[in-house]
Length: 104
Image (cartoon, rainbow, N blue to C red; front, side):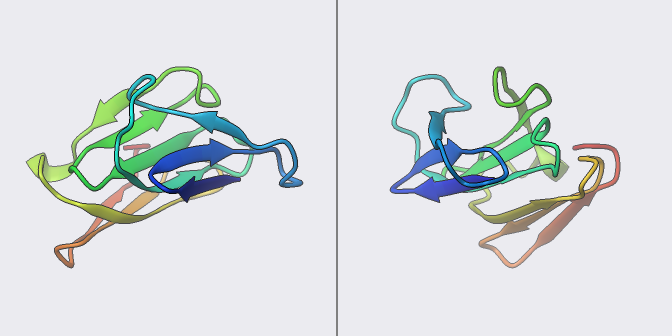
């Protein structure tokens, strides 16, 4: 499970107990707007208002930036990932919906 609250990202186990903050861009105050996680918790995605989209494939321990279609200034407002983490849907504030079928 993931949750974005006040621009910070939190993750938990399947029960929703024991929330821990995770920050894809390091220990900074970034304006995170949305996040999602695969059903096994291994693959996570996080998007921010400033147009960046990040992915982790190791339970949020390390992150890399992903840029769909070269839109570096898109404000992300929704993310979803398939249970196995291979299909990703990313909705932008500009009304566009992006889809990846290879894990981003």
